[in-house]
Image (cartoon, rainbow, N blue to C red; front, top):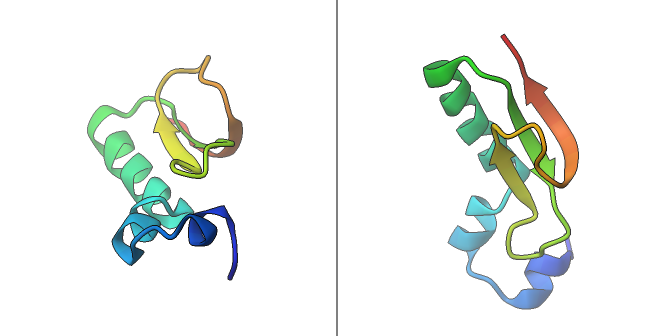
Length: 68
């Protein structure tokens, strides 16, 4: 799998932390503790391709949402 992260030469640990799977796991933990709407967003930033947000006005393409 060749993508922007691989080309940047980041460590395997950084690649794992930047993964969609990790963002979904973090979103699940936030949702379990706060029961608010939580979104996983895809960004254009190769150092942070996925991020978790509880702010409905956050920028990025929504990949997944958890709602109560």
